[in-house]
Image (cartoon, rainbow, N blue to C red; front, side, top):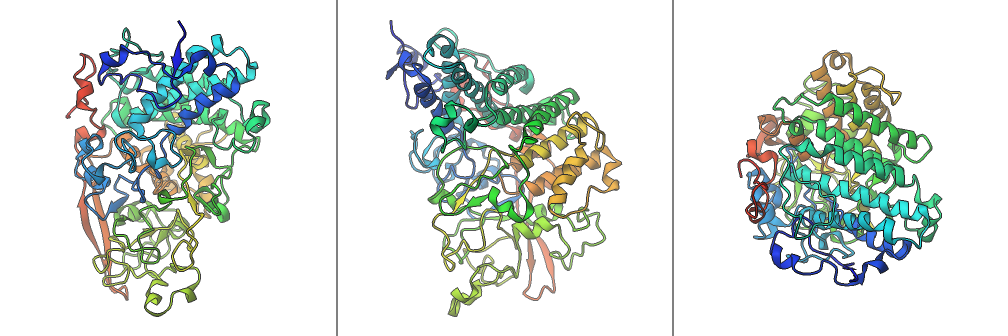
Length: 607
């Protein structure tokens, strides 16, 4: 009897739970003969392409504003926004379609609830992480189960790259799920009525060997560059987002670092890592560094750093920093990130995110390379002076020029030429609904010309990368600090501190100071501070605070703003919001219906 397989969005692998028996009474294949799917490379790659569509871009997966910052790094202006529910500790909201506040990358997008279109061109019309990852795992397992037997009309290289992508995606989708929901089964076969009742692992790391196996296979089978392969010539102008050997090594290193981190290790000590897993993470990152030495990857230059974050004329901002990313257009609503677009220089929308003063103060240090609390240069009466060069590159402060062509803002609009973030200023709440709450805004994702006066909005392409080369340096530095110490040599030929210093060299900043190198905990704090600066407002912070086991510390709960007058005669920090974060908030709750289907698939603690 011929098997059939759907090429459209199909039911989730493990989560055939909902209506499980009814679902399993039907064939899981309904549209194309499986022989046809794997008939040749073109057909098989077409099937694999849907796994790319099931990757979720945290920055563009919502409506017309991105609010991907859920840590203490930013504060939203409206209580309907999902970040407000996270701040209140209402994690169940991710699974409750009860209004605009549940539009988020975890579960559902804006346009098509409750059945998004996986193949939609716009990312915010696709499924969120929960509803995309399970069918993505199933697709990967279908590929792995059938390529060797059925894909006969193909070269060995073609079979290899199909399998390599499948092994990568099987690991990637499991990783995405486990980042948010904790230990979950690692599904390695196509589930049916006989094998779907798989218990949850007791710990996050029970599946680490399966991750390692899949990603090492992926690294072995995938190319360094699709354009250099015969099969890549068939899609020569469309290979920039395809998964490569470097992506496999990068994800392996990342997963091993996460597995080594305090939360995943099961420790309550924020400095307690698994040393052996850190050693293995360093080895994985070293394989990526070897590829980089061939010219495949490099750190973006300081004067051209913007190429990482946005492009013009509908061109993707790629460069050689990109390791891998979700493909898809962001040329419409998703280009409006909620940390900049609502200023009156652009439009009159009210909902926005403002960088918190506590985050800016704690992490964006001084130009002597020290944290604000350690530097003699820091003056609380002049908080915007002598700061880290990245502070000026990415953060908008009072008095900054807001538009490129000053003459375009005339009459009453002259007030929009320069930032008025002081009390009573044109861009400060509560004076206006289109202003900052905290005294800061972010300019990382936009050029100064992105506004209604310069009229450089159409064709702008801001883009959040799943992994970029800077992140690899930062993850390597964190793992190497545990595995070998702050300044000891590693198999990669550089120390942890060398990696941090390379990033600081780019920014024209001094190297890591001796006061940090002498103490392992202080040095780890410095590594984390560097990560907070370089990856600021890219959607990493909430995950980092959780995996480091810091969420219950008041330092990571407070969200503050800075109040000051026009002449800067006073500066006063005020608490805007205090996050609710208890032991249970390290993991999201699982959908209740799924935890009641059979023994062994238990709810996360506290939910």
